[in-house]
Every structure is written in structure tokens, then in C-alpha cells.
Amino acid sequence: MPHDGTKRQGMALSERQKIAWLRLIRSDNIGPVTFRELINHYGSAEKALDALPELSRRGGAARNVRIATQAEAEQEIEAAERFGARFVGIGEPDYPPALRHVDGAPPLIAMKGSGAAAIRPSIGIVGSRNASINGAKFAAMLAHECGRAGYTIASGLARGIDAAAHRASLATGTVAMLAGGLDRPYPQENFGLLQQIYEQGGATISEMPFGWEPRARDFPRRNRLIAGVSLGVVIVEAAERSGSLITARLAGEAGRLVFAVPGSPLDPRCQGTNRLIKEGAMLTTGAADILDALRPLVEPGLPLGRKVEEPSRDADMSPPADNQREIVAAAIGPSPVETDDVIRHTGLSAATVHMVLLELDIAGRLNRHAGGQVSLIMAE
Image (cartoon, rainbow, N blue to C red; front, side):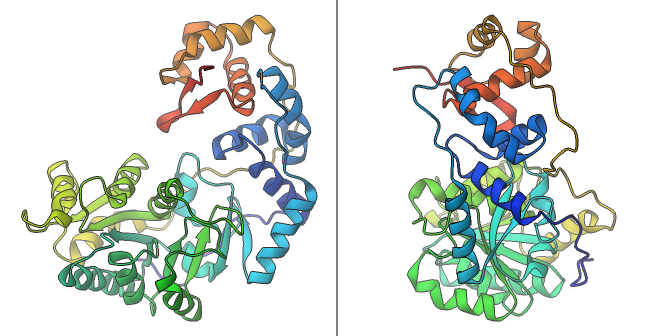
């Protein structure tokens, strides 16, 4: 069963490495997948940063790619320290182990609070902002009982179900995922709850820069973190097309268990959860349903999942030929395709295809989709 003595595993980044990692992930067109591929190819973030202008040019960028400066990275690290926060790399001890399994896991997260809460096995509990009294009470009961069983409760600090889950697990450990920077929590009404999370040994996590005000499109990214850190996600009251259903979908794509609490067919807040049950989510009427299902997943010895590490050797730096770029671009097109299919279709080596995709990505000409699919951004 989960316990507070969870061992931290991993190696710490040096200060120089952390600055280079932060510069790389804050540069234009660099997402988590591109970040990992750059590190794997060039061996370090510093070498990848040096290569970005040339990669962007070879990929056909319309303008020079913006690269975050050393001063910008140092200023953000200083801002984190003033706020009482820190940056944690994907291979470091305080990085949530389950999050390492997720495709596109953020290479760096900003964290404030207890690393112990972040690395324990977690259960996500999310749901309606406009929660019913019974929905909020039930979410609190689940959070309290799962917390007593040794799990950290992960949620998104939203009003309603999220807030109820956080409050009920303050004493046992809770982690809030934020859509904006750690210094820009939302909504304002939960600022007091946020302070209680810090005071009672919980934590907050964000992948966004300090000072970043959350926008509508940032909340699905926040939901991806909730799904990623959790072994299972519980949905309590969710209307159709709600953010909670996005969390459920992301959890399913990441191979997590999805639990749904049934509700009245007459209540619009329950239409989404009832549909999830029809589609195969685990019907949940008590904490035992969750704990019994998760028990096999918390046995000792489970692998921690992929890490991003800086290889000790240099990779082959040979650029693809121009005609090879044309072949790959022609094979992709605007509809998502599997990278393996591109390799088979073109007859080019995997290394060549991946390098062309990297060039197109950094040039802002490639979309990366769930499941490793890619598509070309067509010029208007």
C-alpha cells in the first residue's frame, strides 16, 4: 500500500543544466516531445540550443526562432526562489513518478511545497465547478478515505468538486495543478485554500512560466498534469463537454484507470459521468471501488517510466539531404499520420525521418498529435 516513506529516486541536475533546460523549453516551438528528441540527438540542452537556428533554417522557418536567453532563465529561477518554489527536472527525485510515464511529460515543472506529497501514489479527483451539495460531500468523502489509505489527492484548485477534494485531503496530502504560473493561481476565491495546502504539507505544480496568467487553452494542459500524476482519476459530476471529461480522456490515453460516480439522469451535471460509465469507466459508489482497483498498481518494484537524461556521447550530427526533406514533407500532409508509417512509406532511415520532423517542428511547420502522430501545417 502507499505510504509516506516513498523513496526518492533520480539524479539532480546541475544549476548549469537546469538553466539550459529552462532556456530550451521556453524557446519557440519547443514542446516536451521536441525537447526530448533534441536532448537525445545532441546529448545536452546546451548543444541543442546552439543547433536551434540552423535546425529552424533547414526546416524552412519564415523567421528566426526565438531562443530564451540565459538572463531570462536566471530571472525565472530567481523569481521561483523568491516565491519559495523550485524547478524539478523529469529525472530528479521530487518529480512525480507516474508523470514520467506520460507521452509529452514536461521536462521541467515548477513546484512549491512538499516533494514528499508529489512523489507518493496519487489519485485525481475532479468534477463540476457548479457542484451540488451531495456531489461536493461525496467527493470529500472519497478524498478523505483515499487519503487515509495513503494516497495523495491531485486536483486542479477549481471551485466545486476540486476544492472539496483538496480540503478533505489537507491532513493526508494533496497536490494542486495550476493552469498559470505558480504565482498566478486561479480562482481568487481559493487563495485561502492554497495557503492551507502549503501549511499542511501539500504542494502545487505548474509547467507554465512565472507571471503567466491562465487562459482558456491552458486548462487542458493543467488537466493533462492531473491525469499524468495519478494512477487513476475519479470524475464526480461532469456535464457534457466539461473540462473534467477532458481529464478523463487524457487519463485513458495515458493508460490510467478512469472512475465515474453515477448521478441522476435529470441532473445536467451528471450527464458526462453517466456517459463515461456507459463507455467503460469504472462505476464508483465508494472509496473501496477505487482502492481495490488500484491495489495491484502500487505494489513495490514498478518501473518509474521514461526519463529525459543527457547522454554522455554525441549523436550523429549529419543533416538530411534536401531531397530527403522534400520526400518526408510530401509524405506527411495536413492529416495526422504515424511516424512509423512515414518511415515505411519513404524508405528513409528512422534517424533521417526523425531529424526532418525535428527541423519542421522547430520551424513551426509541424503539428504533433496524441499517440505520436504528426501532420504538416500548410501555408495559407
